[in-house]
Amino acid sequence: MALKIDMSKAFDRVEWDFIANMMLKLGFPSKWINLVVRCISSVSYSFLLNGEVCGNIIPSRGLRQGDPISPYLFLICAKGFSCLIRRALAEGKITGFKCSRTGPVISYLFFADDSLVFSTANDISCVAIKSLLTTYEKASEQVNNYNKSALCVCPSLSTSEGERLAALIGVNLVECHEKYLGLPCFTGRSKRAVFADIVNRVWNRIIGWGEKLLSVGGKDTLIKAVIQSIPTYAMGIFRLPKGLIKEIQRLCARFWWGGTDENRKIHWCAWDRLCSAKSEGGLGFRNLETFNRALFANQGWRILKNPNSLAAKTLKGCYFEGLQFPESPQ
Image (cartoon, rainbow, N blue to C red):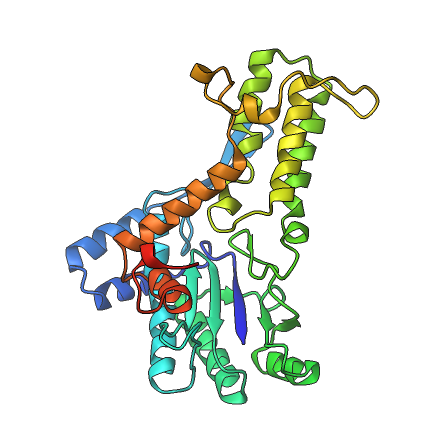
């Protein structure tokens, strides 16, 4: 089972004493801890009302979002939750899972305030997770948003059993977690349906610019800086279907030549030619299919440079067990 945890107002609820105690346990010197506590506690808030600044509120907890040190302090807070999970894992209350026979055990994934916890779908794991959540909430003053948190179980488990396990934790049961960090957790057989949102976002951008009188240079800049950057994040992790990439490039070409549903314009040059370098007679637009492969090569470089990372070990166990990455057949 996979539990997605959503902390309510994660940065605003952090207890300052909890940060200080965590830093002390992690071995930070007392002088450094006092400096950090002074930085986060010497905060005051004012309100802009009818164009005038008024009020002066001094908070008793919380971290300011946008403060350069806030993300690092929040990681220290998350370290406390991580230690609780590791202790439950050592005691056998939480088991985690393996993607392959030789892969590492994955018990949790953290990124800022987004958390995924993995374990065997049984009563012991659910009670243990509920207990460690309660312990963490009492220590840090953070509150789990049980309405937004959700549990996903394997398809072999019945819906009634899944709902019973979700009730033990106090969350909702979902068929699958739709997204994590803005990307789909599962792609299934139809990637085009999963990533159709990318095409919709491109189309919405183009519609917004359709009524404006744009120069050739303006269109060039918008295509390169805005439209072709929309799928970049997804392409860094997934290989997008060729049909979806062609659809995005078709919309780019339509915007470039100024065509509409009522008034279609002639495309005087193939899009592949426009994607050539300017020195070769093109305009330097990205070939998204080639760019997708280049981003995958970047992931390969990370695996080669950091072979001991969790991602590298997991992929090695799944796709090239006993081989080096360049020798992988997949």
